[in-house]
Length: 357
Ligand SMILES: [Fe+2]
Ligand SMILES: [Fe+2]
Image (cartoon, rainbow, N blue to C red; front, side, top):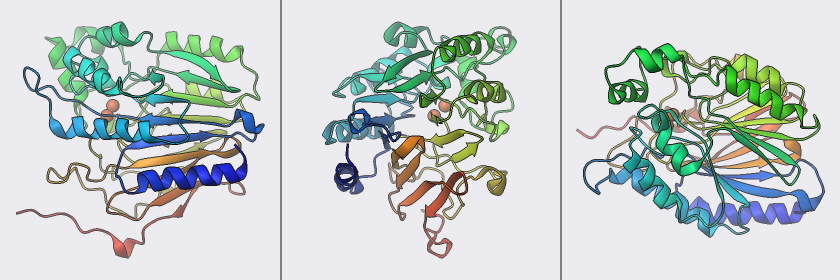
């Protein structure tokens, strides 16, 4: 894609989606290579489809995913493929996973899946793997090496010995503020696999690593956290251009640790607020100019949104489209060597907290 084509692509995609409020991420991978190697992929995450009874599911979460799929199918030019970032289900039920895959089956293109904790802790991923195959894998696409990890595993003792039933285990891990939970991790076995996989890849090859939880330590109390993050980062360190994309946090996050850029996708379901302990200066988290409210049950898309991710020369520029707020841009700053907020809503324009009673 030439520069002019790219500008046109951004314009067309933006025009198509600006009117909507869809939690869809479109990723443009350029990496400064020959124009034939440029490509895009889309990213949809965290739908949390919730089974009620019989054929009934919570409508709000269904609608978010249905709309994201519909808009993804309208994109022009078409993305080369799609990623689903995890948490298809709310409580890991086979009905929820099947329902999600039926909706996602309407996507016109290949979909790569990431395992979320809400998909896992009822049957330890059995139904998910039966429908979708391995929970960690890699592939190459037009000169870029993609790696998918299952980052939501935890200690065997917690998983196998602590709970009277699988449902109780699932309920504990499904909570946000969860003193009974256990930190997520990739684990020894998968890290050994990752090392083997990366040993075969040239260090000049751009890497895109997909995980559900952030492969960094943000906030342990809410499991915005991967316990063996440093060990994974050490395996990614020899590569010149590394991008980690993740779901799980249902909010805008961006960070730079050494050579690794981190970016989160927003959810199709609901937003999480920012933990009060975020250390923005140290970690280059975005400025908190907009207080994120908890999801408003009277507005099904409240504080969800979608991002356009532009990965020129291997670095990530994220264009966030936020309904009810000014769009914001977190762009790679070449001089500073980390992503920076370049466009955001003035704090004076902050939307006041919502009251309904
Ligand atoms: Fe989630
Ligand atoms: Fe999650």
